[in-house]
Image (cartoon, rainbow over all chains, first blue to last red; front, side, top):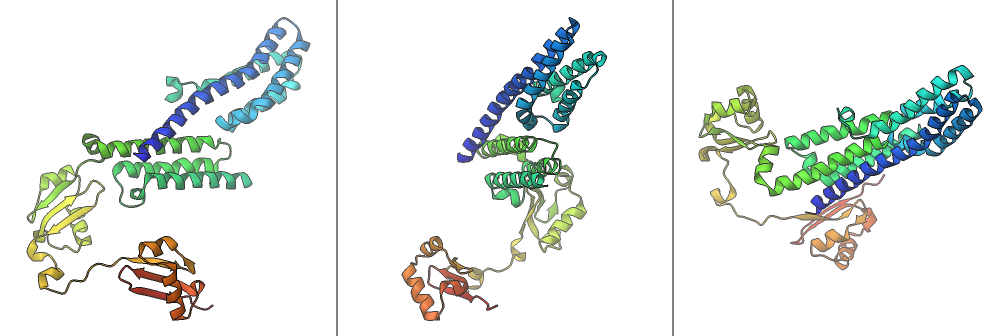
Length: 122
Length: 224
């Protein structure tokens, strides 16, 4: 019976870990996505300076959260986001909007990948 | 490179822990579920060991999941007979009184060649000598020969019977094993006296084994 308890304990830790990881990834990816969404809105309103400030804020949030996110998500995806953020800084004005949109999509996908959906399971 | 070393060490330690928790059967004859688990564990650990781009958790989590499932299912299989049968199958009688059960052979998907090979591995060269041959759930063939073909035992020939002895290693490679000393019903005073009698110290002994009846097996260390 000792081993049954050990098995159940490990199973409980895994299930708890699943909920925790999903919440953590959602929260941290969301923290990076929020300034990116605001930056897109600012750009659509014609305020490129504000958009770039918010993009820098997103980059700072990414630096804060990248370590934890890379513990759960393949480094190919996290490195992709890091590279896109770096390129954003040097983007000329006419490309800023499309790059912001692609980056936002990539960050949202990080959280999407962890969601318990049929698409992700299969 | 240091990252690969650390990741490999972590996964290796986890595998050792997992196999230890799953028990001795995992390294002996395996039931089908146990075989699957063993194959899975090896592959689950290998990929994140080699690919630093994958989070370590992508190896740790599946291994822990397999371990948890194996522990829970093993206990369920032990307590619930129908579940055990579903998981492991049932033994199949292939030979009775020298006659091969062809239906049982076909349903077990064992060919005649394979059956004869398994019999030869048990030193049986004639099916007619077999009283019962059972294909166990781990794929092993258990054979009981007919009485007239079985080897004689000591009691059959009236030979003198001596009780079976278990030897405990009390010194291994110079190290005194105190638990084994106690299990053999001996103590350190006895050990000191025995070593003094032989003119050696514990660290000069490669192996000293003792039975409860006081019989000893002594091997001294070879000088370099």
